[in-house]
Length: 176
Figure 1: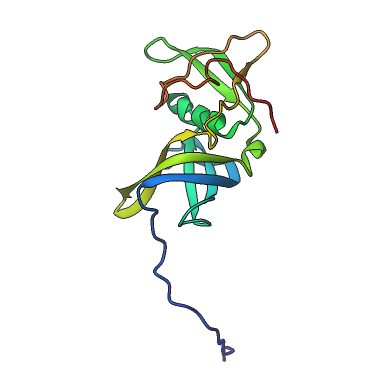
Figure 2: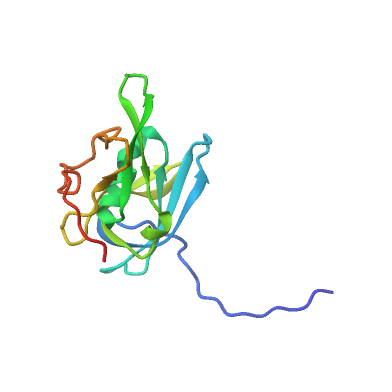
């Protein structure tokens, strides 16, 4: 015979996507060890809305850790002010463009805030949120890439979704 369990619960509407808008997000955790369904490396960023009507709402953002989407990760690093190194590798893509990478401590992202544009989309029959155009909350330039010894910083693999920031032009914001 199983013991009887009694508890009180409120009815829930279940998970609801955020409405299309720009949000201030604060990163609560980072897991750089995830892989996509196609077995590509990616980083999972868990965050919460830090201001406004949806304060406290939890969201998950995914950043591919491959050369084709390096600019997305660079946008996040610049928006949060996390220091990183931009290193040109001795490889080229199918079009002959140099492949490069970013080196940073993923723990440095925890607790940082940034702005992101949120839109709703349907994925595998479910409504989800997409986040894009990450940028600094205060509009200041964020971290610029530092150059690795013996290598030259390269341009991103693809252009960012915004005009180059002061950070991309070599202006460095001090770490707080």
